[in-house]
Image (cartoon, rainbow over all chains, first blue to last red; front, side):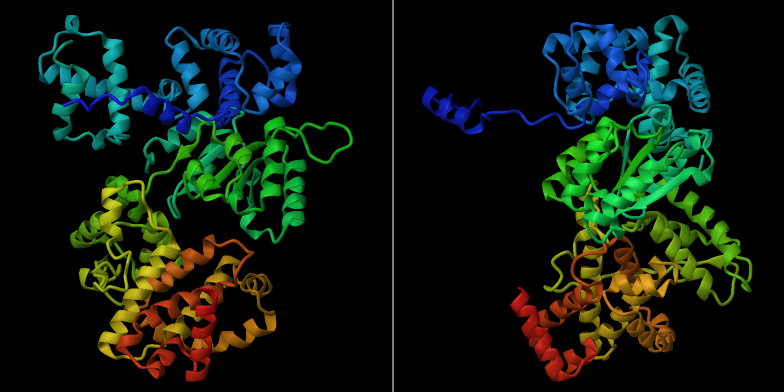
Length: 190
Length: 406
């Protein structure tokens, strides 16, 4: 049963009680913003003149503001942040989500799952090989036809699930893993 | 791969390709330094280019600022690992945070960038929690909060326990000379190792294996008894004096909770006082406790008596005077099955302590005294004095001091 709705005076008092005058600076925002600039490779590092390079990309920004964004956890205005993230994420590749990166920069992990994890496994050939073997074994054992799934999506699910189950070597994959992997890799609606 | 530590190794490898200051977060003994070395190795630099800046060793703000400045100035091409920077005074934390955020050296007439140095900090707990406790400055937390690496306790990755145990057995057998070759662990030992909570994590695995190797008389396989994981030795007696007695059950329910060495020592000392009172055996707990603190201090400084004395806040002469007695009592301490756990935990606690604050010997004594006084109804003052290793008048005085402190 839904609780009875509170009257407006009570709600107004609750709002006043929890409203803060200033939001605390987002912990680690500048570090994450610099991480994104590092990954995008669009400007040199801080000791090699990142601030000036950022200003060269958009001369409308002011140097003092850029320093605050990159060094003092000050959030840029919403539209500037969106534009900057969209620009940097475009440099990373089409599989990256601008809005997710924006949320990650502001709130960080674990509030927003790290968009970096995807990159983490991109270069891990050993892990990808095990994922491929698991993928092949499950499709063979359960007779799953190639036309019934999107291989790229299933492969990413497999990498993520391996991480969650702590599977780092082929012998970590046990017979008991088959069913849970099948259910996650090929959910009923796919 | 021996142990990916729930992705921590992958994350370290990934972050090595960026310029991000990296926080490595994990309870004592989880292998934070191992992850730091993995990250450093991935950069392709030589192992010698990894420099540890142990912030627990700074006696005051000036020393902290000076040592950090020296490390930053000579840091070109290096990885600097700041151990427990949250124990430094707040001004030094803020100064370090500013230098990292701007990548500029403090206190220079002309703005000077830091050399190309990779920055890592090791924290024993979540950054948010350290902030809430008031020990970590927000700015320092923030520069390391970009993408922290969490090193999970080993109980959360049971399959890795045996891998580490076998690796450590292989490593430590080389150091224990004159002993028969140990081939491995019995199935029962493997079973209890899987089930043990390992609050001390990889360090605890190592210390149990080292102890087993040193004391193994015959046989080629290590058993639960050798590892002191025999259930009879693990059970903590239930008493009202042990508020944390359900620590393991609590830890199982709250996976992120890991008691620190001091909390574990508190529980185990309460248990040992309880056992001694039940058996009416006057073990010199106070003397042994002091012995272990001194030995742990010496181990912390690799036998350097001058530094150990400074850490213990005593003179080097005092320390030299104590050592013959401590050595004389070593066989009595080692032969008591009740003492292995407190000894191990004292070592863990002393390793993680900062250099400032109340002297470690006094802290340890106050802890034991608290447990003895909690059982004052069940025992005489003479007996309690005997357990603390002091005369009756001294005991009474110490209790008065304890009450005044409280």
